[in-house]
Image 1 (cartoon, rainbow, N blue to C red):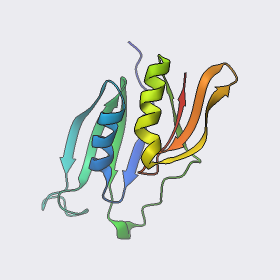
Image 2 (cartoon, rainbow, N blue to C red):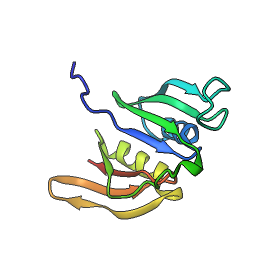
Image 3 (cartoon, rainbow, N blue to C red):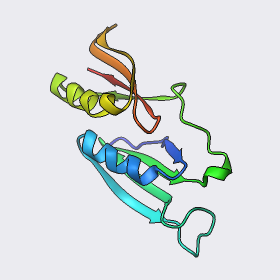
Image 4 (cartoon, one colour):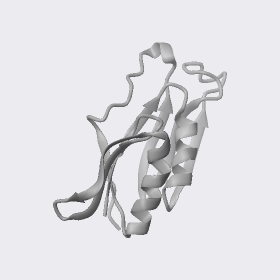
Length: 133
């Protein structure tokens, strides 16, 4: 088993739980593994929003958190993207069809270098994915 030595952390301004739930509907083998919400005992953020959570996506962990809008949470940007290797064309198409309609396609799908299909697409939460097959 390979140990994941670097874990991305997605920070949102109140939409972390929505993003996690969306990803569980788009990507195979994906689940919310843990979620702790802000409570009165943790008054830093908005009550009921994500204090800290873990999403397992295709065997990888991604951490999530919400910060208050007035904390100056920067918007996601395509300058950082997450490459996801697809096992089949059907999987690639399913992922693309799950993200693209409510997101923004920046490139593709098209053949690129050694990939039969590649796309660069930003989802409705502002996270940019590079899907390749």
